[in-house]
Image (cartoon, rainbow, N blue to C red; front, side):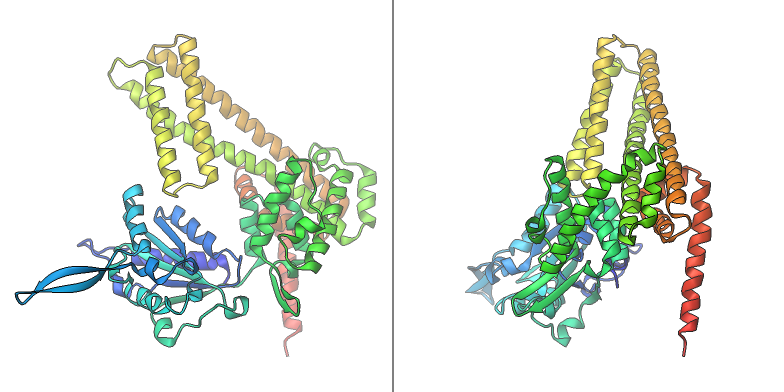
Length: 503
């Protein structure tokens, strides 16, 4: 299955394992909660989905790469304990608590999360001395004599043998005690993730043209040659930062991330063309409604790669706008929740000035932000959102003080006015983004008509989380028209091809 389906399957498994009966006992006892084992190529996202699942399910997460551990660190060190049996004292060998199990208890103490995921990466690459301990771990959920706490689900990941010569095959006894999920790379699913993570549009455009290069691993006489989803994502971040530094990623730099000479050379050449198209076609002008006849004429004569690159440039600029709008909306919703609490505070009897009450709320919000970040429950987007809203509250505190608004009603009316002004700015921004989308359709119709480029344009709008969010609020007639006409025709064509190819 693809990584998106695997994520859903793991979340369903967690929901089942953590469901309790009327007596507060887990309906599936710990001994029957099979560890989840993800097997898939490197860089496909196995570790990342575990982090996402922990955040979305609000669970603790302890992650270990087991290849870094010895038997002593995993199982614990022996020590002598004296015990009395049948009236006689004996020296008995016991073990200190495993570092891994201790980390789970540390996580519970630090976060207050009593349920979570213990994730062991590269589990099928353990040393020969550690292999029996791993078998015991998967079967009995213990390291040495110490059990993983109830409510903590075991998940593990590994690569197939063809990707790693250190892989040890599990025997039937072990496989019969785990829930094995095999993951395959899927470009379409990865692109949904890529839009959320701001993967550089040049990479998305290139993989549209060369989908076979998304995930490729080859063994040659000169060693391994590979391109992985993780490599593309890491390269994307570097390209983005390089652009801010006014630098360009050349072939050598690309080859440090995409360690496949043919693919890295091809992408480096494409990146140069991408920058050229960016300068020539001035997409920002198009979104402002400037459509030049010479540009449309040039695209009519251009190769498909160039036409697709311009389409992707247009989509990238729209996605940036939609993402900024989404972030602003999320901040406003968080701010509104705080203001509702502030209003309730003002309605209660008390002598505290409005500014004092507001600064207390800002302080509580900052504590919440830190706790969620340290517990792994928030991603960078949520953390940034909390920071901005806290800064806004603190800014309003200073304004209340400078304006001497120490009366409850006057303070509330002023803050409410500030929020409404921000709401109006949001509506103006949404209106402007809607106009940009309409101008994008004007250009697509003028340059490509109902061609394949328009199909790709509509399909990408349907794929991107931020564009979908925007189109739920903004009524765009042409989007619905082309969505129905082009995609239906595409599906019908696909069905006819299948029927024609039937024996």
